Length: 96
Image 1 (cartoon, rainbow, N blue to C red):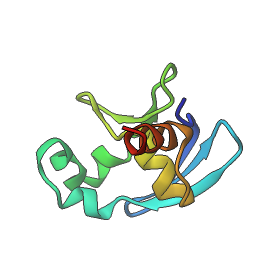
Image 2: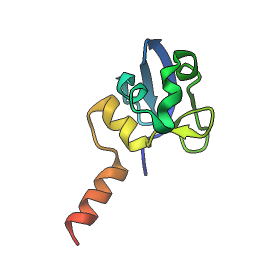
Image 3: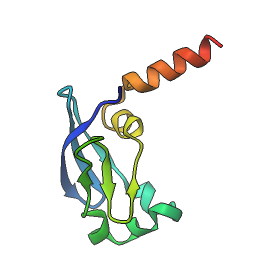
Image 4: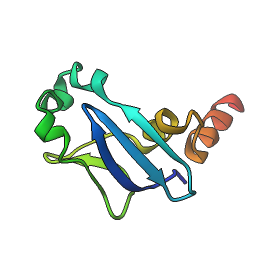
């Protein structure tokens, strides 16, 4: 199971502070995502980026137009730790 985001707060520029359901908290600078284009092209508009919300079922960061970021990526970027979901996949691949 991945760690669910339960709170997100816009700080400045492309920086968000995220709190997870296990109590972990961290900040992420998403400015590199604004340069990626593709599904993240909307991030070039800071007002769009500020429209971030949390999906109430999955606990993932999402934006209008069905844009989201994998929860295990958000957790790793915010805390420097792997989520349980990532650890399980790494273990399974290692045991193949």
